[in-house]
Image (cartoon, rainbow, N blue to C red; front, side, top):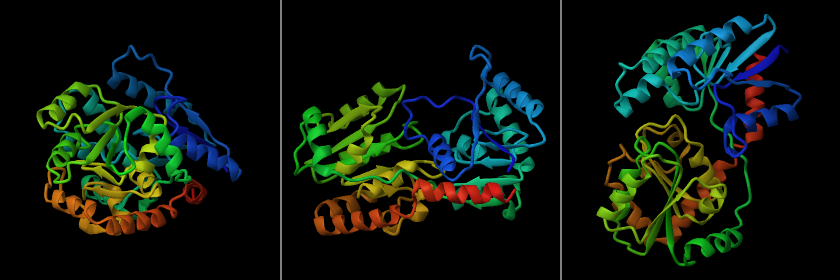
Length: 344
């Protein structure tokens, strides 16, 4: 096999235990597929758009005849491109960002070259695959869909409850609704709060996990909706699995999400998952009735209230989701990835 090199602009921090790439590399080692990760060494003082161009140039010059580039970034010399962030051009439309700044222009240019030059493109959902074909007219047979893989684990309810109860003083009778993610605007935290505030059941509590620069903005929304006594902004956590285990409903009203590993993780901890049709992971959910048409599809409120009032229905969906999640282990994902690498 050729020298397998994963391309990632920024190094993975030791605290980022849930990041896909280091888990993939670890699993590939177990099946005798050595690799290395190449990160950018360019100074962060340089403008981002110029840094990307320089990194791309360095990779092109450095690439040997026996090197196989498996890139998680938009570069012009990738052999395999993992489009785990979806289509940048589409994400821009959902974020309603201006394309006038240099960084957007560089990313759009590199995305086009990357998709055209790659020998193989891997997407984590059919949604992203179809988006690439529609947006860039890439041939379908060049794209393979490989859903995400997660580290399957035990769901020790009592252990998780005792830990979080000390910090948040929750009751075993409380119904919990959870959000986990970054980019609060794109992933619908405002809509999450609005939906939560309109629920008939006022004994439900909500946890919002994730790092966000405009944290105060969302806390003001919660205050305006008069739900501050029932909503916890817990920030970035290392014990996020405990929250998954305790929550009844994982609500993720995203505007655009290529897949969403958090959804699989919530399913593996026996949670009911509610998300939008703009989330790639919606493809693996059995209960399509709980899919939202958009972030602001408030018809979901009635359905949530109905679920909370029917514990048997809630438990049934939890168990169904758990069974589905067992099909998406990191081990299986690595084996499928290895097959795709070997095909080149």
